[in-house]
Length: 241
Image 1 (cartoon, rainbow, N blue to C red):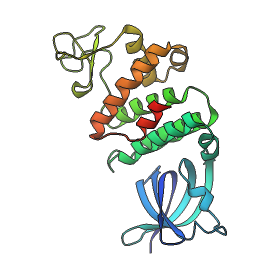
Image 2: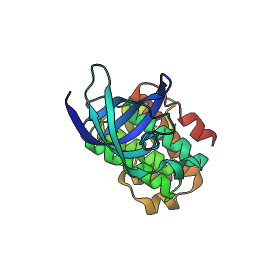
Image 3: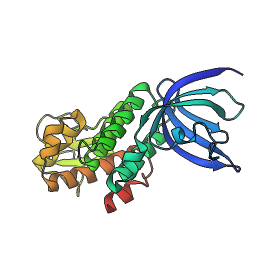
């Protein structure tokens, strides 16, 4: 059977039989991959620990009829251990890989792979607040999928200016004429933070006031879940944390 190789991020796993696992991965070249890793739940497994969620690996697979099969796995980034010991990092990482898992095949691009790897690396190193890393990831993942929020002009009519309403269903910030009754009002510091999170301006993100950070997180969660067309279950634990 034909074999292929890829760099992957492990998104999730679940048990299969007594010793195997089905592993869902986001590959750099092949997009989303579902494969069987045989015998990885045995203590004698050669690569079981390399196929845990949040791990980055170089894998060799061969094509199966319904699921591919993992033949080899070499670790490229062991982020799981540093993430799992911190509740905020762990819950944020879960929300990130759940979002990546929701991407359809056309959206699972090399850029999405690199974005996720960078986000998990930042979480593992504790470089910034975990929720801010997650928020920046969500905005950028939506942008890479063609759903970049309108933040510098009205998302509906393209009117320029500093607008004060954010409507996920309309694509971001909207002017007073386009804003439906009851639209969320966004303070200027929150709007500025949204732009910084999308650009990756971490100095501005790290210096943001807690009120702006909390408000931005709520808007980003609503925006991402609207475009994914269903809730990101892991976000409930992030917010609780």
